[in-house]
Amino acid sequence: QVQLVESGGGLVQPGGSLRLSCVASGASGSDFSRAAVAWYRQVPGKERVLVARFRAFGGTNYADAVQGRFTISRDNAKKVIYLQMNSLKPEDTAVYYCYCLARWGQGTQVTVSS
Image 1 (cartoon, rainbow, N blue to C red):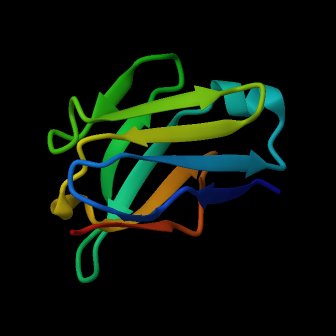
Image 2: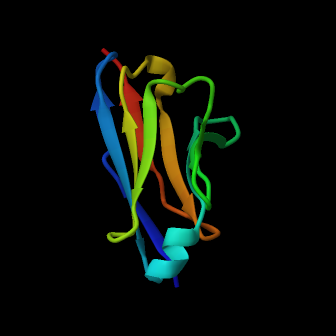
Image 3: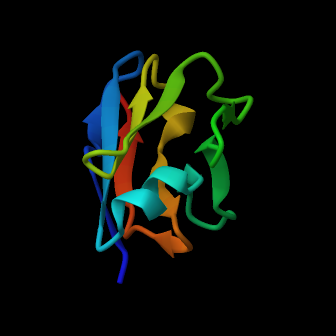
């Protein structure tokens, strides 16, 4: 059974950077490498929204709010999904979730504050 575990969240000052990681355990290498993967985020009282997506056959999509600041990447050999977040803003504060193979991770809190 596939399980996703995120890490890398924390408290950072505005303008800072964080890199989130999401490890997919229990997935075969071929399933993972073919899968679309994504990062979402959610703030209390609001819906979970897409931040960045790596499509199954290549190519990426980003939310307008993070375009040019965030980068999604993947390491198929290690079965890891990354989200590099630069020039962070207070409005980026949220719980970040990875999504892959119809599974969600448990979420990792990102707080951007001075």
